[in-house]
Image (tube, rainbow, N blue to C red; front, side, top):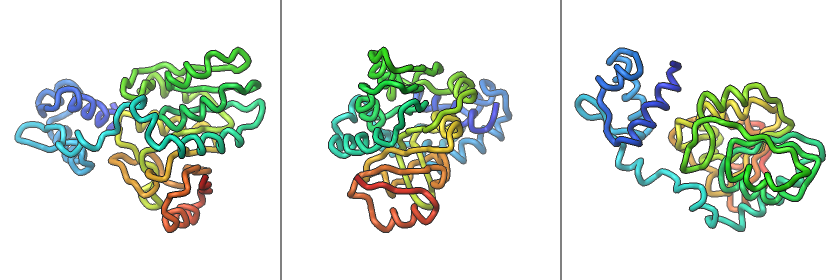
Length: 255
């Protein structure tokens, strides 16, 4: 098991059980207790856990910083998300193959695309597949994997194996944090490898995120900022940060 996979497993377990023991993790993951202690030390620096004698607890501040489930976020910044969606669908050319990631802004994009034909859309997000599945003139491909219930998305090694074999014209993906120095970040380590794999299958990566995400730094680094070809955000984004992001080579569109 790779280190990042091990960290994902530990985070999953501490979220489910709120408390983990070094000895139990060592046996379950097949590594030494010293390795587990180093893993816990690293996770503590990202704010995911609080270490205690013999193990770790889910950090109290982490319970408050996690995003609510996707369907509960649909009304948040709705006008901005719809403007972003309307702009991005105009970037989509007939005949293209797209990958659309999970999230609320990307779901608005799927809704705006739902009447289009002559497109192929791939997604690991159940709400997006449900939205587009009624259009008989659009080719829709679903990616399987382990269900992340809060986002209703498929993640993990099974999803990554499927995505690895794809090549698409454009990737459209949401992001929790966008920062010129700290890059594209997420609050969910268990999604990092899946999101990285998604972003690797196209030369054009479009990040869709309202202005509240610009300047935010979440706990887990997904990719450097320059991995985003285009960032489409709302007009409230900090102008200084936008200039710094553009200096890194990513185009920023304010709508």
